Length: 425
Ligand code: PLP
Image (cartoon, rainbow, N blue to C red; front, side, top):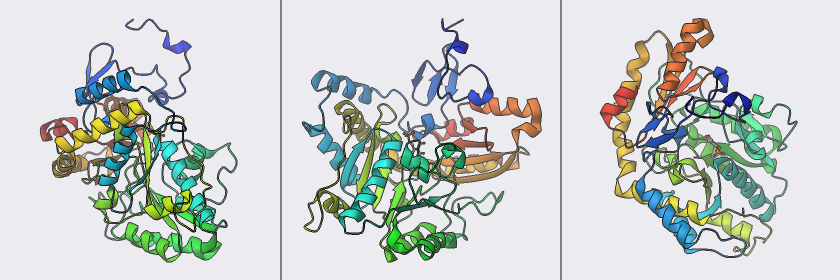
């Protein structure tokens, strides 16, 4: 017994492998692209710690920055004082976002960022004299976190079960994985017209009732669904036509996953609001952020003459000094180590290796974009014990396995070598 805890006696609210009905797997330490269990076994981290750790685990630069910050200023309440790091970080994030998205609100997670973004959208319309705009449009396959807003707009109905209606008036558009088992690499050529579901929502409910449309540019946790060519552009056009705000949830795609700092740049579509978290601190500290267009900020804060000062926002830990220090160190690593460029360079060898799996009988579909891949497997239960063992082996190899829909998601750290990527796959 390596741990003197009887795990069976503890109920864990979330453990990665509860679905395996076994004691949770423990990780004791991590270094670079590797995780180590309590027995010292090495596991390759093929999901970058759930999309969080592109720069590799336990970076000394981040540890040093956190340590120094803890000895300098461990906390200050954003309701009382600001601190220079918060402003420096807001400026750095604004340098990375597409032009115009330079007003930054801080949160402590992806879920909080999403709820903050939805609140900003509603506040914008209210301050702009259109309080009737309360509906949010999203997609039926999407993950936007576990707080009330994110659950309401999220596409996984099961996650909302038992809560009744959360945010009122949410409309779900169809998802974009229209062609099954096509092994399409990158963006499909057809399917952009699915964005017309937004127009249909306008026709059905009236533009004057719709505040925003929120989408993950590439749908992540639900299985890496890549938008068809022109889909995001079309959403942008329809949203513009009807005064609807476009929100990109870039909690997964932010900070280089698609080869540019944000997927908005990769797809060349500028949203009104971007949410981010995860890789912002390389996973080391809880932090999220929301970037908005200046006109939105000005309207909700009263900086614009027609705006009203009625937007109340701020968490006790917004721009927490220690998380801020971790984020600043992370963004320095990205810059100094050329990690955005590296992510772009690794994309081809990564996808080549992923698409080699196409010939395996267990694999029924592969979707990939940037350093993200979703690999659908034949139903595990059809394989009985053997299939289950195969899934477990993948899990042990450090790959995130979603047992519910039998999809393996790969999201390698950007610091992996091309050779390590091949081994991983
Ligand atoms: N939005 C997206 C697109 C996500 O993938 C996630 C988490 O995976 C979230 C929001 C929620 O983030 P968090 O778990 O940090 O609250």
